[in-house]
Length: 236
Ligand SMILES: NC(=O)c1ccc[n+]([C@@H]2O[C@H](COP(=O)([O-])OP(=O)(O)OC[C@H]3O[C@@H](n4cnc5c(N)ncnc54)[C@H](OP(=O)(O)O)[C@@H]3O)[C@@H](O)[C@H]2O)c1
Image 1 (spheres, rainbow, N blue to C red):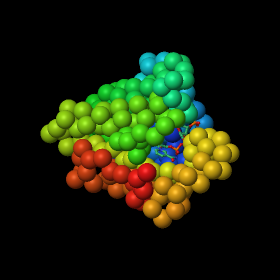
Image 2 (cartoon, rainbow, N blue to C red):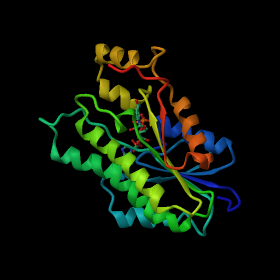
Image 3 (spheres, rainbow, N blue to C red):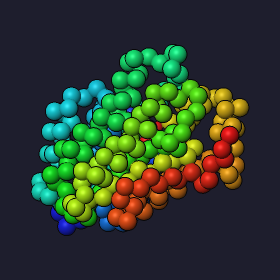
């Protein structure tokens, strides 16, 4: 990694929205460091292969900080996430804890650990969801976590005031990734219902969300903003 280049540190770039986001930053002259269980296979990306739910805090912190020898401009993107289909009535406490850890606690800890390495013009971007500001049935633990992500972003904005490091929560709509396919679980009726939610009756593409994330990360005017990237979702 060259110290002159800005550095993207992203969780969950092995696939989906994270992969496309890593690609855009690479193409715009950033060094890229991904943290996920599987590697991001894009040429030029460095990887820390870790399970962010199961690995100990100290292990994650040590491996991350070992990659950064001195302060530099860093864009930190909290993208990895888990989504269980569950309700108030049937959620499993173990799934609840894992969701809270990966989707909320890990972003807070990574931000705390990396902040001392960030120079002005750095950014901390959270990937939320339309479910950061609304709820639908059968997404209880996920909706809880995505609301918390938005609250965390707002708290970070306040705590970093005056440091010239901005934050933002980008909230994708229904996007064609593995996470969506797992949620739908071959239920064609549910997939059609989720597709019809978009005003132009299609699933969003990871590339479109990645472009919104790149814009948020490179425009400090969005500091503290909740940026919905859903193409206009139909309210039902
Ligand atoms: N797709 C949608 O419709 C949609 C809608 C709204 C918001 N979002 C949000 O967009 C973001 C990206 O989602 P996506 O749809 O691109 O999901 P995805 O394709 O399932 O990718 C999720 C990423 O998270 C990583 N990850 C999952 N569990 C992990 C763990 N225990 N430790 C480390 N990394 C882990 C995965 O990497 P490994 O498996 O290699 O570990 C993967 O790279 C998420 O925050 C999601 O909530 C998605």
